[in-house]
Length: 200
Image 1: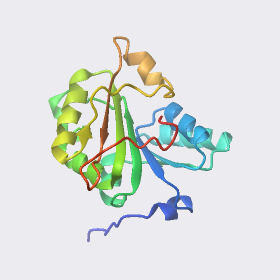
Image 2: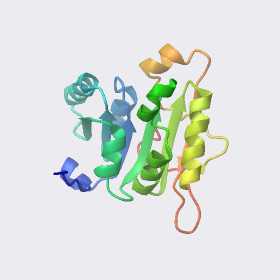
Image 3: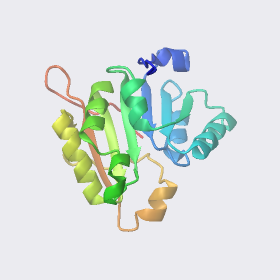
């Protein structure tokens, strides 16, 4: 018999109703931990598919006394669809996602219309999605799906000055980083980035 899963309120995760930012695939946690340290009044939730990496990031957060960080080892696609409520995320951060370039790995890719619709659904109106990658084609594929879902791409976006350089960026982005920012339009049709946490 299938298990019924319902959206979990952030207050049950963090014990408060502060704004929440979500990082998909935090890697070693450089961006996540810097953002959490810079903005203690904001909650940071990370989803990392590798359990060992997730545990390591959680331990680093604890060692630094960051009480506003939670890390979950899971498939981000399932977590966003089944556990995150409507219009409850102030910002998403997606830095250097695995491109899974081989055709046989297609079902592992984060870049799908279904994921894009879930990101739109869970962002607050005016909320932002930050995307950085070393693969231009991946960024454009993701952009196409996000815009098709209803997010607006902000022209001329550049990486926030305060964002730390990640281990993966140092390793793979020798030819440069490709960055884009998207927002969920507000009901009046406007959209603006939501720099809740020092704009990391």
